[in-house]
Amino acid sequence: MLVSAKEMLIKARDGKYAVGQFNINNLEWTKAILLTVQENNSPVILGVSEGAGKYMGGYDAVVGMVNGLIKDLNITVPVALHIDHGTYEGVLKVIEAGFSSVMFDGSHYPIDENIKKTTELVKLAGDKGISIEAEVGSIGGEEDGVIGAGEIADANECKQIADLGVTMLAAGIGNIHGKYPANWKGLDFDALAKIKAATGDVPLVLHGGTGIPADMIKKAISLGVAKINVNTELQLAFAEATRKYIEAGKDLQGKGFDPRKLLAPGFEAIKVSVKEKLELFGSINKA
Ligand SMILES: [Zn+2]
Image (cartoon, rainbow, N blue to C red; front, side, top):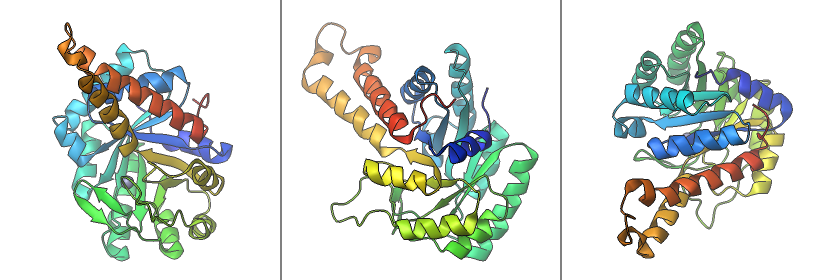
């Protein structure tokens, strides 16, 4: 059964570790992540961008697939199904479809508009026992075709949004989506400390977890980050393993073209990548 992300994030905040949000794209992704968190007794948040939701056929298909896998694979660790960077309309749709957690990304609106819309959705999600993430300060890089410059969130604006009663808050601290450029300056820990001081108990979320050095991840967790989003890293791992299989000509040997064989190396690569993240984030045996 899907759960809200609230309880797992409070435990993570208090226990000084982070819960991973791993974005899913299809059956292989979802199964690999669920099996790995179950093997490692870790809570997990499955992220779905609006683009990925559309790709998988729609939100009902996503909910059906995830709930079916939880049942068929006997997954007993806490699993939250969460829309990643949801629009106002997208959040309404996934709540209707049965998601247990939402992110409303109003970071591109003026702060007053972000507050207004976040307030409405906090009320709606709260009434249904669904956790809600809000965002202040856009996160750089590309997500579903939208390229952000990577702002440092204003601590006072973070406090205004946190005070609305959100479950978790994403705040830009120099992190970006996708691969980090060679000249990246790193996370801004002074900004993170200021945001933490201004927002109090609200668990903080770090987007763009792919390629942030381990020591920076650990420092961010020590400063209040309780949820870390990983998306690109699993895509790179899957693509590399699949490419090796094809380049070795294995799809041409016997029934190597069978999708159950063709997609197996990528599936295993996702499992390895997820396990590494669970270790780094400290969420193993925290289910
Ligand atoms: Zn993000």
